[in-house]
Length: 563
Image (cartoon, rainbow, N blue to C red; front, side, top):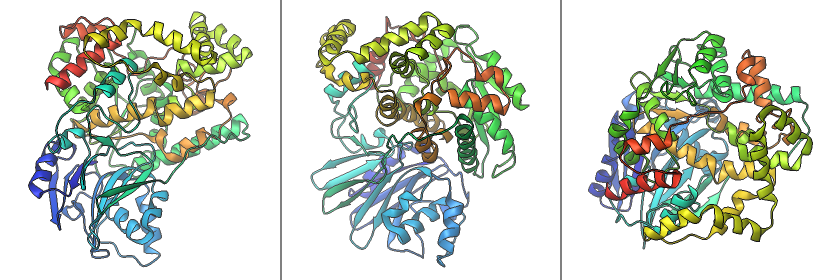
């Protein structure tokens, strides 16, 4: 995990931009310049800690190429063996070298072979072209800006703001404040774009051409429950095995929820495999707010896997100390203060670990949120009865969300206008444009699987992955998310929907797996907290009159604007 930066700008300009991202890679900083192209890199050493693996990276095998790379290629050992079968030499033990040699040998087809989280750029000295690529789900960030025939890129927006003017895109700001989401691949800064996930691109002759290399499609297949659980367990076990590869200390964050508890059991099963010592377990508890405290569940998973868990207890008043750095680390508006909890947890983990494993992605893939359940129970009346039996009035609220999704376009827009009336007035008072409420239509489609797909590729998951990457890297910590292994993702969209919601439970197949792994009580928990936070209390402790999440996002934007 690192930061990358570069473009056809003077070396000193790129080095300055790279210097503001040194938190992403405090172990080594390097740069390269040739024929008007500058590259810079900050390294967080995770695999092959020797200097020979530092970047920008070159190799005697392909001396015409120069690589800057952020992330990890988890299956690098298997790829290395394949390349060695073609008599391709290696001079380090790094995944960086495997990436570069794979590109030199396979070209852009190498992307189909990578199982990893990555964003990288390769300079080809022969024609002064730049090859860009980003992983399938966008786990690792990459931003760029083009002005005429000039391009610059960086792992974080703050790097590009050292090169291009800081001008807010008011339309995007308004969307984030109102909808907690913006337009695809745009940012809240004019002229700064997010390089799209699952794409590669070539910048040559002043033009950037983008190509999608991976498509996620819904292809339900027939599965029995036993076959589904068996395949899911096998895929997750291998995803964990690959993500335990490193030469530094690994930690795992657990909440006592279904997703992280499954990972905890798999870590126990893989103990010693590709792992530098024991994996350390961490959990977080708001002891002063019993309605969101998960201490009892954290202790339970610790007992189930026979591990002691370091419990981190954040204090409400600490938000005053950390708020500025939290916002600085994110670069953009974020949905709510729930990510503050993760920020505090990662801060503690970074004292002893350099890699953290977590359960991000499972909800979007397997139907863990109320709006997923709402779509399903509205279209499956027997499922609604089962849900109502378990959850009472909460199930009725979910059903009403499904009903809202089933309304025609004009009725939806009418309800959107009523729901957002007060916040639209706040936008007007702030002097910001009112975004069209048609932006919400795609978030209120009725189809269950299509809703999961959009949450995975467009809405929930991309934002959660962004929050987690920045929260980890601001503390020089690499995050890894086994549920976003592309094989697990593709499996999830092969799985029939009745194995995702069944007997009144969401994420049904995951719950069955967790029970079989040995945590029956945790498997059938009916409360869902996740990384919750006392939103309004945190805002008020900072001196703001916070009434709802719009107000939380407005204070975040104010901090970004005032710096």
